[in-house]
Image 1 (cartoon, helix red, strand yellow):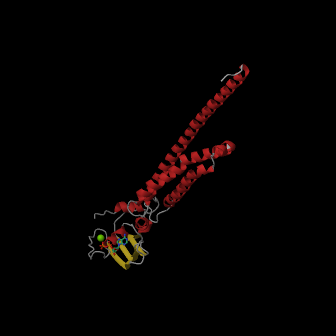
Image 2: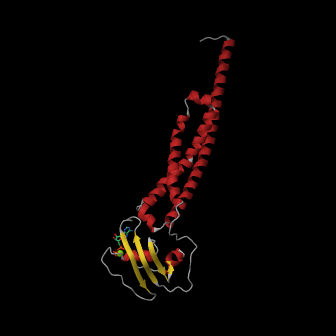
Image 3: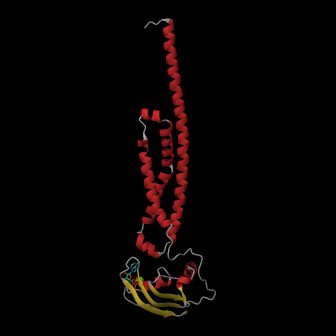
Length: 251
Ligand SMILES: Nc1ncnc2c1ncn2[C@@H]1O[C@H](COP(=O)(O)OP(=O)(O)O)[C@@H](O)[C@H]1O
Ligand SMILES: [Mg+2]
């Protein structure tokens, strides 16, 4: 195709301008991409660290709970499953997705027209929002456990410690049923006294409550009524950790 001198110049100029615009645009995109990558990376690190913190907090409270908690609320394996499963959801919500969501909202607000033409809309944020909702639900469950204060708290530093510990054991008019089976009464006004130094044998058929006596003396459970006494002092008054150190159990 033949072109007059002036006409040709205009076309060439147009092509050059077009080229500049294209390369300029891709550079800006690259810059935006790398800065957004950095931002999302930071959020991933935050999510990871928070998840690790929540995991260790959760494990600590789980280990602190009384035996009744395990009877009632958790099956074997559930602890680990909750700890890993839920923290992954939290990590996902707190990390990358927050970064992405902020970025997407900023993009949406800042470049509304461009976004509109390119077909970006808040629809893209839906996966982030659902991840955040899932993370919230998971966190609720974990924190419910984390905030649970056990009735029998082996971490509680308060309570009596005796210097002159003898080791008299007494169950006084004890009424007891297990938390998981409140209708099945194991003891109805049961009393038993064995003084320090005395060897006592509990004899009875399987399921008659021998192990339950030991569980009450170890304070794995509290009776609904009556008292468990060590050296004449209510077991509930002792520091749990200290009294458990004084009792040995071989089974
Ligand atoms: N953790 C528990 N939760 C609910 N019921 C229990 C629990 N442990 C024992 N029991 C019930 O309490 C009763 C007494 O059990 P146990 O003290 O273990 O008897 P023993 O040691 O004399 O065989 C039984 O009926 C048993 O099923
Ligand atoms: Mg037994």
